Length: 452
Image (cartoon, rainbow, N blue to C red):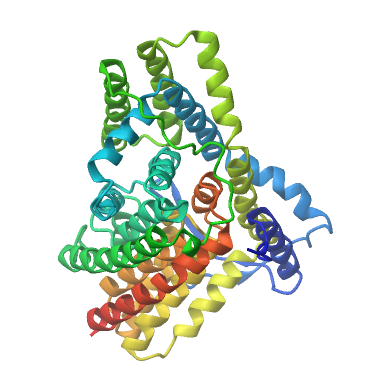
């Protein structure tokens, strides 16, 4: 197979950083007035105005990259800690034993495992907003899929199709639904049945898309989009290790760590710092249960973290794009210009237009909650003017945020997971692009129906 001419993820994102700076020389600087709401800065609709801003220095894009790395420090450090923890746990043989047991049970029908796991990830994202928490599962699922005769794209599809659909059709997600509905002055969790129904429909479409690809790869490995990628390091076929008492206890500790964190998110609003602490504690517990000496545990932790250096770099570079846009004060200019295109459209077209607008905004603001605070104060009154209705405006925001998370290269989490799973971004686009077309058709029908 010829080497792909599609640029490496770092090359692609670096090009976007440069493009963002060039755009700053063309667009006028401007901003909306903002007010503090629940500790976040919320846009005040109708207050956009041009401002004076110094032009970026020619080499500003270079100095912005370290700042982007610094602003993404929480997730970068989390990635290193996860890599270290997985390294320690794998050294105990617990992961290999679990994978071997799972392969023996579902080796003849991996479709059940794929669809079931994707559903779990989707429900986690739909209800409590899980996303970063799925990072530790990337190496585990890639190893399992390779052992089942599948590939890394199947593993990433299980995680990120599930998470993307879960966010796009979120029923209870406190980081997107609750914030957007509060800003739009809607009853919290209103329209739940519509979103649950859409979750089922889109999950069925996503599972069909992924299982069809998995079936092709299982029948002919040459059909894999990553058949030329070397997975010999970091994703070795799991050893046929027995699942003894020690290893079972380590896996139990892993599961307990996830439960503790999920409870912490819901009860005490934990985030990446606390999750990193949980995985650090898990590393210590796993080493003790596995009989690994402190010195060896430290080496395994360091080696596991080192394997994720590329993923960490991609995350920091991706965050830099937003740094450039903020430095040039042109992010609000883009938002104001795109939102203005919806004025005067019929309700059905305006609803679909909102989906397009939110999808564009997600390229600029990959954070779901951040996007809600910036766009919903504009979209809510616009929904009244166009007759779309605020429920449809919230749904358009959810679709634009969640579905495009599966493909936008400015999404640091996606790019980090792809780098961790050794899946080139261009190959991922070829895989997930057709799925997004199908899901967006469902989204358009749903928005036109809700708007009427």
